[in-house]
Image 1 (tube, helix red, strand yellow):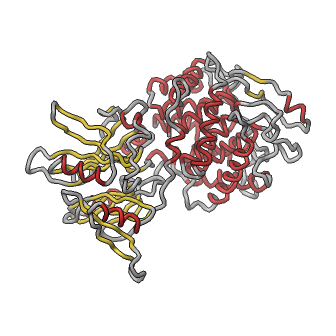
Image 2 (tube, rainbow, N blue to C red):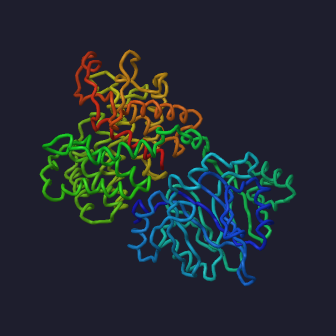
Image 3 (cartoon, rainbow, N blue to C red):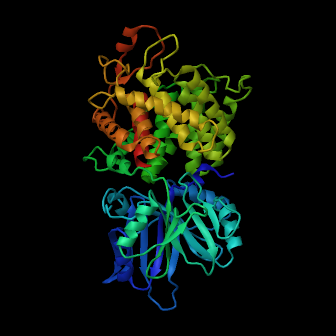
Length: 594
């Protein structure tokens, strides 16, 4: 079974060698794909980059010698963690290059298939040409805004099919040749392996094939229309050819809402997730333990956020320093790790599991997995962990270490445990309005308590497969909660200490958790971007305004037990620099970079 790091976000680009660069560029720009930069050697263009969307591109390379074949040169896949993917592929016996920074500023890894064709993998990095061009060069005249797949001919299609399935972790969508193979991850994008005499090409997804056919005809391109058998003239496939004979096909697809990209870019100086995350993560590295006697869960959550931010921002020095802060716990400071069987201590395992995913050092896996496995020793008759309390905080604390164990090992039992626990809590504790009382007998919608719920569901949904039997129930509960939170967000972008009481004070740890959950939902298409994108952006901008000159979050509610007393909640002390507040801003910065 594949571990989570092998999953990729989708196809980043396809590269074609063309006979005449000017002619090829004119063809693709006629389709509405704008050139956003090119690379040169002297006065000669060596690569031309055309944009499909903020994550997908077409690269054109001019032929420099008559013997060079025209058509597909390679497919490049996007990954959010190239170092982890590199380690995973090496473990599977693949020969892969070192991860390096490429000319455009992104990280790059290269391998070869059995017939010698290049396979590229990229991780988009802050400051790169692709990153800085987000939201730009996206013409309204594009015939399509999503590349759904690529066709790659092979001399031995059956052997190539086996390579993609056994080594690269693709999933077969049919049993014949051409072989339709779906990428690892949840993009739904695919590579088709065809016989050697077939044309290479690209497949685009469009919302309306008839409309696309009319558009192509209007451009003078006269698409070949393939109709569904037995369904009259209903088109299922449109095909045109580029000037060098590559097949450009169009199929009907449900398109992702691209609006989320526009809400999460173009930040004012000092307000971007890259800048804020770096400030807060570097401050975490130099901060003492919150409790000198033991590691407690708020520090664990901040540690996890610092690790994910360092990895997603590509800051290897920061990542090394966050890991270095942990390593004394493997030796002289091991006594700070609490092994009591309690949800607040079991969550610790999430951190070494994250470090394992970054380093592939088995000592971290052993430590983290031990907490995940022990949490489910001798489960209750209903299958839930013995740590079950039905406190809403547990919806993050009990599930995140299990989700992390799945991400590190690929073992689905950890996801099954998390999903079982989450559904049990949802069924028992979610109120008809979508929110959660701090405890059934304490009927106050305490902000941070609900924040743990929102963050826990978002983390679990990020890893739960679309066909998991409990996914629909969790997604229903998540969306119901997000709708309620949208209605209760303050005009200042913040959420309150008591969510439904506008007379209670703006509280930052809950706001950070809700922002993380909302950004994650928009990014993954679980929430309507046009509705939730502006709210999430407003919340982020409000939240970072509470960070002081020392990179400490202010207005953080102190640790809070349950008490059936309104004044108890309204009069809680407001802390500065408490890890309860540092953690969610790091989670949200990470979500905005994913």
